Every structure is written in C-alpha cells, then in structure tokens.
Image 1: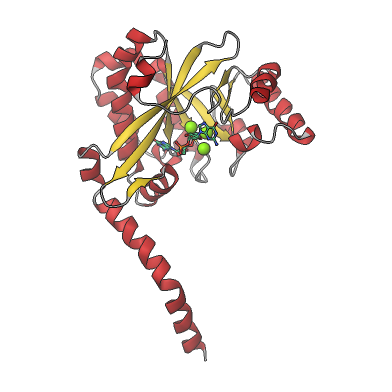
Image 2 (image 1 turned 120 degrees about the vertical axis):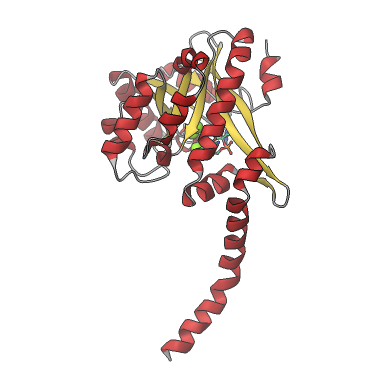
Length: 272
Ligand code: C2E
Ligand code: MG
Ligand code: MG
Ligand code: MG
C-alpha cells in the first residue's frame, strides 16, 4: 500500500541524507570557531599577461582544513555556507585577509591585482559594502587593485538589488568579473545585465580548445567581450597550445597549472 511504499523509500534514502546532514550541521555550527581557529587559509594563483608574459594578477582561493573532516573542497564548503546564509562571513574574512596582505604584496610586486571570489548571495544585501566601509581608511587606496569575481552558481532573482550592490562596489574602485563564463545558468543574460570589467572563460571551454565548434564559440565570446570593453582572463591553462591559442585570440590574461598552481603567500612573495 501507499504507506508501506513510503516507509521503504524513507529507510532507503535516510542513511545517506543523515550523514550529509550531520556533517553540514557540524560544519555550520562550528563555522565561527573554525574561522577564529585559523582552519581557513588562502592560496594565491598567479595570472600572467599575454602581451609581455608578466605576472599581473593573482586569484585568492580559500582552503578549509577541518579538525574532524580534514580538507574540505571549496565546492562543498561554499555550497554549505551558501545554504546556511553564512557565505558573507567567509567573504568578509577573505577580503580582510587580502587587504591586510596587499601593502606587503605591493612592496614585492608593485601594482599586482588580486581577484576574490564572491557568491551571488554576497550581492543580495548591504552587509559586504558596510563591512568594506568599516575597514580602516588606509585600505581605501587598494580597492582599485581588487577584482571581485562573481560565479553563476545561483540564479539571481533580484537583479535590481544585485546591480545596486555592484554599483556601490564599483564606486569604491573595485572591478567586477564574471567568473566561469559559459558554465552556468545565465551566461549571456549576465553579460547583458551586469556592468562587469572582466570575463573569465570557464575551464570547461579552455579544455575543449581542439574542437572546431568550440574554437568558433571562443572566438565569438572574446570578440563580444572586447566590444563590451571587458578584459578576458582564461582559467584552466594546462597546455602550451592553449597559451598560443588564447594569446592569438586576444585574451589579456592566462591562469592555470601550466603557468603556476595555487601557492602560499610566502611562495608568491619569493617569486621573481
Ligand atoms: P574558480 O573561482 O573558478 O577558481 C578556479 C579553480 O580552478 C580553482 O579551484 C583552482 O584551483 C582551479 N584551477 C586552477 N588552475 C587550474 C588548471 O590548470 N586546471 C584545472 N583543472 N583547475 C585549475 P578550487 O581552488 O578548488 O576552487 C573551486 C571553486 O570554489 C572556485 O572556482 C570558486 O568558485 C570557489 N571558491 C574558492 N575560494 C572561494 C572563496 O573564497 N569564496 C567563494 N565564494 N568561492 C570560492
Ligand atoms: Mg574565480
Ligand atoms: Mg573560475
Ligand atoms: Mg569555477
């Protein structure tokens, strides 16, 4: 009967859901403590300018080493923190870390630009902008060196809210980047709606560079971005052919394992 079927279904699915749910609750409940206990740290992945092959930018990528669960992938903890509305706290921590390191970083690499990943959720209220305004005035001069990358991980339902946050951030000097372009929900809608300064081509496209149709698509995307006055960054560069291809296609910056893996700040500081 209906009742028994339902019961069976419940028994079958429950262990799996129960496990994930328990982990999620543990991670979320201990999140503030984890932040304070330095379980989070940043890796920095260089970006190189195609024109002169110089180091010109770096993307910060957050890592979480948890005492109970070990290393948790960003995909997992970002989703978990988004679902529990805590992602903005992580974003604030990352921004604070970057601003703290930028003066020293610029002593070694003058003018180096830093990219920070944000969640669309960060743009849906005022908390991030308030946090940035609460930081010491001495950081204000560094905003122009910071690019905020937005991924299409969530469908944005309130564009006017998101747009006004983006305008607030741009007023303070930040650049806006559309990350993982081509991988998500609303690639072309984003291009049309968001006043972004940069487009990052997703590594799923970078990877398909050998295929003729992909080549045509890449050529078109890059042409379009140029007409919209956006900088093109290509992520996931793993082969020399990709460097050649994207240099020829007119991309400004390249990032990927072939060039450098994400590294500690110390390694970045000791790069020549
Ligand atoms: P993303 O922003 O697209 O970052 C690029 C990802 O590609 C990073 O994965 C990087 O380690 C990886 N990668 C770099 N070079 C190569 C390559 O040549 N080949 C391949 N296959 N992969 C490469 P990671 O560090 O695991 O981060 C995954 C995603 O998690 C990021 O993708 C970003 O969306 C998110 N994320 C990471 N840190 C943060 C953060 O602080 N805040 C937010 N909101 N999201 C973050
Ligand atoms: Mg990114
Ligand atoms: Mg990306
Ligand atoms: Mg990505």
